[in-house]
Image 1 (tube, rainbow, N blue to C red):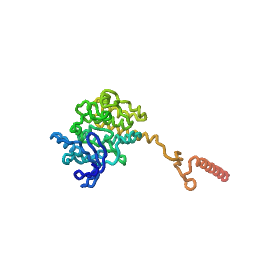
Image 2: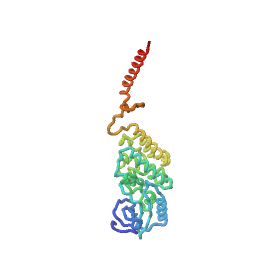
Image 3: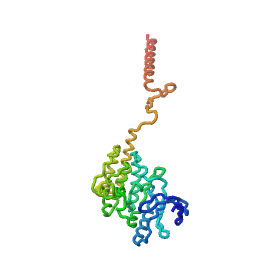
Image 4: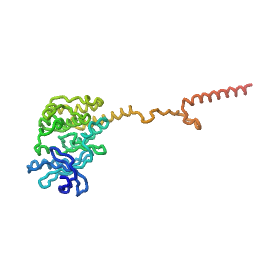
Length: 330
Protein backbone atom coordinates (compact mmCIF):
# COMPACT_ATOMS: atom_id res chain seq x y z
CA UNK A 1 0.00 0.00 0.00
CA UNK A 2 2.89 2.37 0.67
CA UNK A 3 3.23 4.77 -2.27
CA UNK A 4 -0.34 4.25 -3.46
CA UNK A 5 -3.04 6.91 -3.45
CA UNK A 6 -6.55 6.34 -2.12
CA UNK A 7 -8.95 9.12 -3.03
CA UNK A 8 -6.73 12.16 -2.36
CA UNK A 9 -4.62 10.48 0.31
CA UNK A 10 -1.10 9.36 -0.56
CA UNK A 11 0.07 6.46 1.64
CA UNK A 12 3.48 7.24 3.14
CA UNK A 13 4.15 4.47 5.68
CA UNK A 14 2.51 1.73 7.72
CA UNK A 15 1.98 2.64 11.38
CA UNK A 16 0.35 -0.46 12.80
CA UNK A 17 -2.07 -3.31 12.36
CA UNK A 18 -4.77 -4.93 14.46
CA UNK A 19 -7.97 -6.91 14.31
CA UNK A 20 -10.02 -3.85 13.36
CA UNK A 21 -7.75 -2.64 10.57
CA UNK A 22 -4.38 -1.38 9.39
CA UNK A 23 -3.26 2.18 10.06
CA UNK A 24 -1.13 4.19 7.65
CA UNK A 25 0.44 7.63 7.70
CA UNK A 26 -0.77 9.55 4.66
CA UNK A 27 -0.60 12.93 2.98
CA UNK A 28 -3.91 14.68 2.43
CA UNK A 29 -3.11 16.28 -0.94
CA UNK A 30 -6.29 18.36 -0.95
CA UNK A 31 -5.70 20.05 2.43
CA UNK A 32 -1.90 19.67 2.52
CA UNK A 33 -1.73 17.96 5.90
CA UNK A 34 -0.64 14.66 7.38
CA UNK A 35 -3.38 12.27 8.47
CA UNK A 36 -3.74 8.72 9.72
CA UNK A 37 -5.79 6.34 7.58
CA UNK A 38 -7.30 3.22 9.09
CA UNK A 39 -8.27 0.74 6.39
CA UNK A 40 -11.07 -1.45 7.70
CA UNK A 41 -10.96 -5.16 6.84
CA UNK A 42 -14.35 -5.00 5.15
CA UNK A 43 -14.37 -6.86 1.86
CA UNK A 44 -18.03 -7.78 1.69
CA UNK A 45 -21.23 -5.90 1.17
CA UNK A 46 -22.47 -4.46 4.46
CA UNK A 47 -26.07 -4.70 5.52
CA UNK A 48 -28.08 -1.52 5.68
CA UNK A 49 -28.11 -1.80 9.47
CA UNK A 50 -24.29 -2.05 9.64
CA UNK A 51 -23.92 0.93 7.30
CA UNK A 52 -26.17 2.99 9.56
CA UNK A 53 -24.16 1.96 12.63
CA UNK A 54 -20.88 2.94 10.99
CA UNK A 55 -22.33 6.24 9.82
CA UNK A 56 -23.72 7.04 13.27
CA UNK A 57 -20.43 6.14 14.96
CA UNK A 58 -18.54 8.36 12.51
CA UNK A 59 -20.95 11.25 13.06
CA UNK A 60 -20.64 10.97 16.85
CA UNK A 61 -16.85 10.73 16.72
CA UNK A 62 -16.55 13.77 14.47
CA UNK A 63 -18.40 15.86 17.07
CA UNK A 64 -15.73 15.25 19.71
CA UNK A 65 -13.28 18.12 19.98
CA UNK A 66 -10.89 17.92 22.90
CA UNK A 67 -7.12 18.51 23.28
CA UNK A 68 -6.62 14.95 24.56
CA UNK A 69 -8.76 13.17 21.96
CA UNK A 70 -7.41 12.21 18.56
CA UNK A 71 -9.60 14.08 16.06
CA UNK A 72 -11.85 11.96 13.84
CA UNK A 73 -12.22 13.53 10.40
CA UNK A 74 -14.39 11.21 8.33
CA UNK A 75 -15.42 7.71 7.26
CA UNK A 76 -14.96 7.17 3.53
CA UNK A 77 -15.45 4.48 0.93
CA UNK A 78 -13.35 4.01 -2.20
CA UNK A 79 -14.75 1.29 -4.45
CA UNK A 80 -15.15 -1.59 -1.94
CA UNK A 81 -12.68 -0.21 0.64
CA UNK A 82 -13.82 1.44 3.84
CA UNK A 83 -11.36 3.68 5.63
CA UNK A 84 -11.31 6.15 8.49
CA UNK A 85 -9.45 9.46 8.28
CA UNK A 86 -8.04 10.68 11.59
CA UNK A 87 -5.62 13.20 13.01
CA UNK A 88 -2.01 12.06 12.65
CA UNK A 89 -0.33 11.94 16.07
CA UNK A 90 3.44 12.17 15.96
CA UNK A 91 4.54 10.12 18.95
CA UNK A 92 4.58 6.68 20.54
CA UNK A 93 2.02 4.59 22.36
CA UNK A 94 1.74 4.80 26.13
CA UNK A 95 2.82 1.15 26.27
CA UNK A 96 6.25 2.12 24.96
CA UNK A 97 6.68 4.59 27.84
CA UNK A 98 5.67 2.22 30.64
CA UNK A 99 6.11 1.96 33.53
CA UNK A 100 5.55 5.60 34.48
CA UNK A 101 7.66 5.80 37.64
CA UNK A 102 7.26 9.51 38.42
CA UNK A 103 4.10 9.87 40.50
CA UNK A 104 3.41 13.45 39.44
CA UNK A 105 3.71 12.55 35.75
CA UNK A 106 1.43 9.54 36.28
CA UNK A 107 -1.20 11.69 38.02
CA UNK A 108 -1.04 14.25 35.20
CA UNK A 109 -1.43 11.48 32.61
CA UNK A 110 -4.41 10.02 34.50
CA UNK A 111 -6.08 13.45 34.68
CA UNK A 112 -5.57 14.04 30.95
CA UNK A 113 -7.00 10.63 30.04
CA UNK A 114 -10.00 11.01 32.36
CA UNK A 115 -10.76 14.48 30.99
CA UNK A 116 -10.88 12.96 27.49
CA UNK A 117 -13.32 10.30 28.69
CA UNK A 118 -15.36 12.92 30.49
CA UNK A 119 -15.85 14.76 27.19
CA UNK A 120 -16.82 11.56 25.37
CA UNK A 121 -19.20 10.32 28.06
CA UNK A 122 -20.87 13.72 28.29
CA UNK A 123 -21.60 13.32 24.57
CA UNK A 124 -23.02 9.83 25.04
CA UNK A 125 -19.99 8.02 23.57
CA UNK A 126 -18.38 4.98 25.21
CA UNK A 127 -14.94 3.76 24.22
CA UNK A 128 -15.39 0.04 25.03
CA UNK A 129 -11.90 -0.82 23.79
CA UNK A 130 -9.51 0.97 26.18
CA UNK A 131 -5.93 -0.29 25.92
CA UNK A 132 -2.48 1.14 26.64
CA UNK A 133 -1.99 1.01 22.86
CA UNK A 134 -4.96 3.33 22.37
CA UNK A 135 -3.19 6.18 24.19
CA UNK A 136 -0.52 8.10 22.29
CA UNK A 137 2.22 10.19 23.90
CA UNK A 138 3.35 13.00 21.59
CA UNK A 139 6.90 14.30 21.28
CA UNK A 140 5.83 17.17 23.59
CA UNK A 141 4.58 14.68 26.23
CA UNK A 142 0.92 15.42 25.57
CA UNK A 143 -1.59 12.59 25.44
CA UNK A 144 -4.08 11.67 22.75
CA UNK A 145 -6.76 9.02 23.19
CA UNK A 146 -7.57 7.06 20.03
CA UNK A 147 -10.61 4.98 19.17
CA UNK A 148 -13.61 7.01 20.30
CA UNK A 149 -16.62 6.51 18.05
CA UNK A 150 -15.67 3.00 16.92
CA UNK A 151 -17.62 1.09 19.54
CA UNK A 152 -19.67 -0.91 16.99
CA UNK A 153 -16.75 -1.73 14.72
CA UNK A 154 -15.97 -5.13 16.26
CA UNK A 155 -19.60 -6.13 16.02
CA UNK A 156 -19.77 -5.05 12.38
CA UNK A 157 -16.56 -6.93 11.59
CA UNK A 158 -17.98 -10.00 13.36
CA UNK A 159 -15.18 -9.88 15.94
CA UNK A 160 -16.53 -11.25 19.21
CA UNK A 161 -14.81 -11.11 22.59
CA UNK A 162 -13.03 -14.41 22.01
CA UNK A 163 -10.80 -13.11 19.23
CA UNK A 164 -8.37 -11.11 21.39
CA UNK A 165 -5.38 -11.74 23.61
CA UNK A 166 -5.10 -12.28 27.36
CA UNK A 167 -4.09 -8.62 27.70
CA UNK A 168 -7.19 -7.52 25.77
CA UNK A 169 -9.31 -9.65 28.10
CA UNK A 170 -7.73 -8.06 31.20
CA UNK A 171 -9.06 -4.64 30.15
CA UNK A 172 -12.66 -5.80 29.75
CA UNK A 173 -15.12 -5.14 32.56
CA UNK A 174 -17.00 -8.12 34.05
CA UNK A 175 -20.24 -6.93 32.45
CA UNK A 176 -18.52 -6.56 29.07
CA UNK A 177 -17.29 -10.16 29.31
CA UNK A 178 -20.80 -11.29 30.22
CA UNK A 179 -22.26 -9.47 27.23
CA UNK A 180 -24.70 -7.35 29.24
CA UNK A 181 -25.63 -3.71 28.59
CA UNK A 182 -22.77 -1.28 29.11
CA UNK A 183 -22.62 2.23 30.52
CA UNK A 184 -19.75 4.62 31.41
CA UNK A 185 -18.86 2.51 34.46
CA UNK A 186 -17.52 -0.17 32.11
CA UNK A 187 -15.01 2.33 30.70
CA UNK A 188 -14.13 3.30 34.30
CA UNK A 189 -13.18 -0.32 35.05
CA UNK A 190 -10.96 -0.32 31.95
CA UNK A 191 -9.37 2.95 33.09
CA UNK A 192 -8.54 1.30 36.40
CA UNK A 193 -6.74 -1.46 34.50
CA UNK A 194 -5.00 1.15 32.34
CA UNK A 195 -3.65 3.14 35.30
CA UNK A 196 -2.53 -0.06 37.06
CA UNK A 197 -0.77 -1.20 33.88
CA UNK A 198 0.71 2.25 33.25
CA UNK A 199 2.25 2.44 36.72
CA UNK A 200 3.52 -1.11 37.11
CA UNK A 201 3.80 -2.57 33.60
CA UNK A 202 1.80 -5.46 35.09
CA UNK A 203 -1.85 -6.46 34.75
CA UNK A 204 -4.08 -6.62 37.84
CA UNK A 205 -5.48 -10.04 36.93
CA UNK A 206 -3.88 -13.41 36.26
CA UNK A 207 -4.25 -15.53 33.15
CA UNK A 208 -1.89 -16.91 30.54
CA UNK A 209 -4.66 -17.17 27.94
CA UNK A 210 -7.89 -15.38 27.27
CA UNK A 211 -10.27 -17.81 28.99
CA UNK A 212 -8.17 -17.83 32.17
CA UNK A 213 -8.07 -14.03 32.16
CA UNK A 214 -11.86 -13.83 31.74
CA UNK A 215 -12.23 -16.02 34.83
CA UNK A 216 -9.78 -13.91 36.84
CA UNK A 217 -11.46 -10.61 35.92
CA UNK A 218 -14.87 -11.93 36.98
CA UNK A 219 -13.93 -13.92 40.08
CA UNK A 220 -10.54 -12.96 41.52
CA UNK A 221 -9.41 -9.90 43.44
CA UNK A 222 -6.81 -7.81 41.60
CA UNK A 223 -3.20 -8.24 42.69
CA UNK A 224 -2.46 -5.33 45.09
CA UNK A 225 -0.59 -2.71 43.09
CA UNK A 226 1.64 -1.96 46.10
CA UNK A 227 3.22 -5.33 45.43
CA UNK A 228 4.82 -3.69 42.38
CA UNK A 229 4.78 -0.01 43.42
CA UNK A 230 5.17 0.34 47.21
CA UNK A 231 5.96 4.04 46.70
CA UNK A 232 2.48 4.94 45.46
CA UNK A 233 0.44 7.30 47.59
CA UNK A 234 -2.59 5.80 49.40
CA UNK A 235 -4.81 8.18 47.43
CA UNK A 236 -3.69 6.86 44.03
CA UNK A 237 -4.00 3.26 45.23
CA UNK A 238 -7.54 3.96 46.46
CA UNK A 239 -8.60 5.48 43.12
CA UNK A 240 -7.36 2.44 41.19
CA UNK A 241 -8.91 -0.05 43.60
CA UNK A 242 -12.32 1.64 43.46
CA UNK A 243 -12.26 1.68 39.65
CA UNK A 244 -11.54 -2.07 39.63
CA UNK A 245 -14.53 -3.10 41.72
CA UNK A 246 -16.40 -6.06 40.19
CA UNK A 247 -19.85 -4.56 40.62
CA UNK A 248 -20.58 -1.35 38.68
CA UNK A 249 -22.46 0.03 41.70
CA UNK A 250 -19.26 -0.13 43.77
CA UNK A 251 -17.15 1.82 41.25
CA UNK A 252 -17.15 5.52 40.51
CA UNK A 253 -20.53 6.27 39.02
CA UNK A 254 -19.06 8.72 36.53
CA UNK A 255 -15.67 9.81 35.25
CA UNK A 256 -16.44 13.21 36.80
CA UNK A 257 -16.10 11.65 40.27
CA UNK A 258 -12.85 9.91 39.36
CA UNK A 259 -11.45 13.07 37.81
CA UNK A 260 -12.33 15.14 40.89
CA UNK A 261 -10.39 12.75 43.15
CA UNK A 262 -7.39 12.74 40.81
CA UNK A 263 -7.29 16.54 40.81
CA UNK A 264 -7.56 16.59 44.61
CA UNK A 265 -4.69 14.08 44.74
CA UNK A 266 -2.61 16.32 42.46
CA UNK A 267 -3.17 19.35 44.70
CA UNK A 268 -2.27 17.37 47.81
CA UNK A 269 0.83 15.90 46.18
CA UNK A 270 1.95 19.34 45.02
CA UNK A 271 1.55 20.78 48.51
CA UNK A 272 3.58 17.95 50.05
CA UNK A 273 6.32 18.28 47.44
CA UNK A 274 6.67 21.99 48.34
CA UNK A 275 7.00 21.16 52.03
CA UNK A 276 9.74 18.58 51.50
CA UNK A 277 11.57 20.19 48.57
CA UNK A 278 15.12 21.52 49.08
CA UNK A 279 16.77 24.36 47.15
CA UNK A 280 19.26 23.24 44.53
CA UNK A 281 22.95 24.15 44.69
CA UNK A 282 24.02 25.82 47.94
CA UNK A 283 21.59 24.50 50.59
CA UNK A 284 22.71 26.97 53.32
CA UNK A 285 19.96 29.34 54.32
CA UNK A 286 20.86 33.01 53.82
CA UNK A 287 21.53 35.01 56.97
CA UNK A 288 18.45 36.99 57.94
CA UNK A 289 19.08 40.72 57.90
CA UNK A 290 17.80 42.84 60.80
CA UNK A 291 14.66 44.85 60.41
CA UNK A 292 16.43 48.12 61.35
CA UNK A 293 19.35 49.12 59.20
CA UNK A 294 21.92 51.90 59.52
CA UNK A 295 23.36 53.84 56.68
CA UNK A 296 27.01 53.65 55.69
CA UNK A 297 29.21 50.72 56.70
CA UNK A 298 26.58 49.23 59.01
CA UNK A 299 23.94 48.84 56.26
CA UNK A 300 22.77 45.25 56.14
CA UNK A 301 25.05 44.23 59.07
CA UNK A 302 23.96 40.98 60.81
CA UNK A 303 22.20 41.45 64.15
CA UNK A 304 24.74 39.37 66.08
CA UNK A 305 27.47 41.81 64.96
CA UNK A 306 25.45 44.96 65.67
CA UNK A 307 24.46 44.13 69.28
CA UNK A 308 27.99 44.58 70.75
CA UNK A 309 28.38 47.76 68.71
CA UNK A 310 25.09 49.16 70.02
CA UNK A 311 26.02 48.25 73.60
CA UNK A 312 29.37 50.01 73.18
CA UNK A 313 27.68 53.13 71.88
CA UNK A 314 25.23 53.03 74.80
CA UNK A 315 28.09 52.76 77.34
CA UNK A 316 29.86 55.71 75.73
CA UNK A 317 26.67 57.77 75.94
CA UNK A 318 26.27 56.92 79.64
CA UNK A 319 29.91 57.80 80.36
CA UNK A 320 29.47 61.10 78.52
CA UNK A 321 26.38 61.92 80.60
CA UNK A 322 28.21 61.17 83.86
CA UNK A 323 31.18 63.32 82.83
CA UNK A 324 28.85 66.21 81.85
CA UNK A 325 27.06 66.07 85.19
CA UNK A 326 30.40 66.05 87.04
CA UNK A 327 31.63 69.12 85.18
CA UNK A 328 28.50 71.18 85.75
CA UNK A 329 27.95 70.20 89.34
CA UNK A 330 28.86 72.93 91.98
